[in-house]
Structures are given as structure tokens and as C-alpha cells.
Image 1 (cartoon, rainbow, N blue to C red):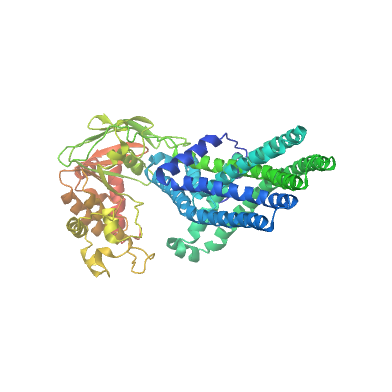
Image 2 (cartoon, rainbow, N blue to C red):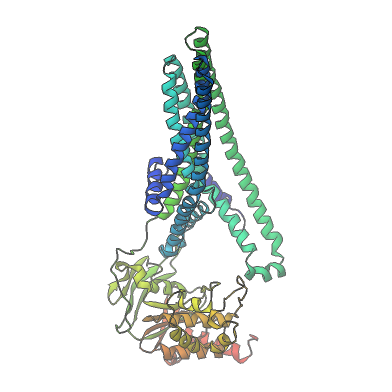
Length: 615
């Protein structure tokens, strides 16, 4: 788990142009909110109006009272003016606070909706993309941007509201100041444009280096998650891995701190340049304003009005610049979210040919001159495989570890597409089908099967709605789990794992039987077992496979096992070696051939005869 300086170096120098502009990202968020929770937009507009009216009230209150005093109005009129402004201030402040409180729920909901979209994309995107490190970086970055209420997907509404408020106020204040020297206005606008341009470039540093930041975050998140993974607890303690994991985490953290410090230095320079330009801008404004007073061109009330206007005008320019800089950074974050959500599918999904599983239809799978090579691999894992799995056939795939058995299953199941050749379902290339529909044809138990910390029933049915309890009990019995389930505190409603109070841990063999029950419950026309019984002893494995042979009678079934004796019942056995089909036939035919199959069979037989000693 050492840090690759070459990888980080590439990430450090990676500069990418955003896939979507600022305007496009704002339109995307507004459109999403309008469809999902339009109150977010309405509240933002109402808050902006209330805030603008509050600012204008604060601006005019003193000049109005001073003007009334200069005009020598009555005490009653002066009191009425003061009460009117005071009431307006109280009412507008209360309205702003109320609207801000009410708007939070909608903003959170929109952020959570985007989080759900990211989760759904991760769950349904094409399988090769999930294994692509570049795609995983995009996914990790997008996931980070919806995890808190400070994320861009939530705070952008505050930024947009503030920007709208500040722009409207800027226009109002500018119209008030146009009666003064026009050169002052030009000087203010020029310094504003220069300041914004510099800040705009410097604040884009984070996006230009987002690949490096994602790499650090991904490594630290991975180590943090693994340190809390109870399945590793025994290894951590036996092998003393805690110091190793902590050292790797700390070394990554030091690199991340150095990266963050570099970013802070860039942002500090942006703040320094902004401060200098702000000082120049304010100096010019005050010079002209004081000159107008000395010439007698403005009254006392007008002086106060212009004086306050200059203050809010210059601070307003800074606020607009800050809002625009913040909006740009938030836009870049939203762009990162959209890059993942918009990532193109490798496989055809909804646009592919629809297909519906039917137990009454005979299915045939054919591999036609299929080769496959993993990205950046030096040679093919499988080369020129020609294989036809006939309807209703029980096929066993055997071979040494690393021979390519699981890769072959991934090609058959449609998780991967061949580098060369075709995989055909009933003589049709599976790449033309809706890939999600194609997956529905399979009931499978893989080596790295998934068990969630939900109830036994939900793990088997893979849903919490409309569970067929009669079918489930039959599948549990067929998998040999009835006695175990009956002893659980709440039967099939017992949670698996220790996340919940009534949760229980099942043994490896029990979990594999649970997965067999899940495969039976799906009741699909094609069965795939990829070494699902490795935690069982040879006798128990043979019993499970023989039971599967009975239950899958008439269906196309594919079995992978490292124990050759367990596949005797199959109609045909193929031995994978060096990326190709080395031998093919029934168990008896392969024994009679006296080839590599016999060599492997003899080694395993001797191992079990001698009690697993290997001597």
C-alpha cells in the first residue's frame, strides 16, 4: 500500500477543461429543483426580495430622518417616520429568518436526491466501468460532494440568492452614484473586472488539480473504512497490521496536507490582490465624494445617503466577486458530479433489444472465437474460445487457479464483452440486448457473493416488498438451512450481521447455503455456480451439487469447482488451461483420456485419502 509517486505526479499535472459551463450547471440545478422540489427556487427568490428590501430600508433610514429634521417637520411626523422604518426593519428581518428556516428542508432534499442519483448510477452502470480506476475516482469525488450540508449541491442556493440580492443592490447603488463623476464609476468597474479575473483564475486551481485531491481522499477513505471493518479485526491483531495501516494513512495525510498548503498559498495570493484592488477602488470613490461635499454640490442628507451608498456599493462589489468566485467553485463541484452521472454506458441498456426470462424457452449460449484481455495486461486471459452450451445442459468448468474460469463466467453472464469474438444467446450477439434484461436470465452464486446486514428474508428475496414466503421456505429447505433458520431468534426476520441488536453471524458454509437459497428463489432459466461451496467440506459440497442437479433439471446450468469429484454429475466438463479449452468430455471420458484432468484428479484424490496432509 505504498504511495505511487508516478501516479500522483500524473494526477498533479492533470489539467482538464470543465465539461459544463457555469451557466449550464446553474440551469441543471434549477431544472432539477423545479422538477423535484420547486419550493427551493421560490424560497430563494422570496429571500432575495426580502433581503433587498431590508438593505434598502437600512440605507434610507438615516438620510430620511435627517432630511425630515432639516425640513423641520413636526414631532408627530418625525415619530411616524421612525416607527415606519423600525416596523419595516422588524418585519423584513423576521420574514428573512422565517424563509431561511423553511428553505433548508428543500435544499437538503435536492442534495439527497442527487446522492440517490449517484448511488443508482453506481449500482446500475456497466460492469467494466465499475472496475475502471478513472471511473471510480469520478464516483468517489461525486459521492464526497453530497455528504454534508456544506456541499456545493446544497449551498449553491444560498450563493445564487446572495448573488441575485447583491446584483440588484449594485444596480440600485450604481444608479444613485451616476449623478456623481462618471470617471469614478469607470475606475470602480475596471478594478472590479481585474479583481474578478484574477480571482476567477486562482480559484480554479482546485478543479485543475482535482485528480490529485481525489487520489489522496480515496486512499484515506479506503484505509479508514478498512480499519473499521470487523472482518479484518483478527488479521489486524494477529499480524500487528495496525502500525502499518496507520503509517500508510499518515504518509498519505502528510502528502494531502502539502497539497492543501499549496492550494492555500494560491488562494492567499488571490486575497492579497483583491485587497489591494479594493483599497484602490475605495480611495478613488472617497476622493470624489469628499470633493463634491467641499464644493457644496450635496446637502447633509445627501452626503449621508451617498456616504452609506459608497460603503455598501464598494462592499457590494466585493460581495459580488466573492459570490461569483464561490459560484464558480460550486459549479466546478457540480460539474464533477455531472461528469459521473453523465458517464456514458459501455453496454446497451434501455436502447438494447428487450428480453424477458421464460422457463419454457430453451436457451443456448455460444462463444464464437472469443478472446479477452484485461486493460493494460500484456497477454490475453482467454484466447480463441469456441464453446456451445446447449439448452438444458449441465456444464462444469474446471482448471487451476488463475486459468481464466471466472473470466469465462463473466463473459457468459455479460459482465464483460470479449476483446475479440462474440457471445451469442440463441444465435444473437448479447451486445444487442438490453444488458439489464440479459442479467435477469441468470441465477448465480459467485465466489465473492454479497450479504447485506438486513433480514434473512430480504437477503434471499433481494427486496423487502411482496416476498413469497412459501417459495422462500422451500428454497431454504432445498439449500439445507431450515434447521438453522428455525433456531434463529426471529426466524427469517432475523438480521444478519451485528449492525442490528438481533443480528447474528452465520458461518462461511451457512452463508454459502443462504446464497444458494437466493439463487433458487430467483428461479431464473440459467444457473451459474462459481465455486460457491468452497467453505463446505467435500461431502457437503457434493450433496449441495447433487441437489442442484435435481433442482435445475431441464435448465442450462454452469458449475465451477476446484474439486473435480463434485462435478461428476455434469453432462460435460471442460478443463481450462493457459487461456484455452485444454480438454473436454464427461468425467469418465476425461479419466479414460489420461490427460491433465487425470493429473489434477489424482492430486486431489491423494490429498483427501491422506487426510489433507499433502505427504
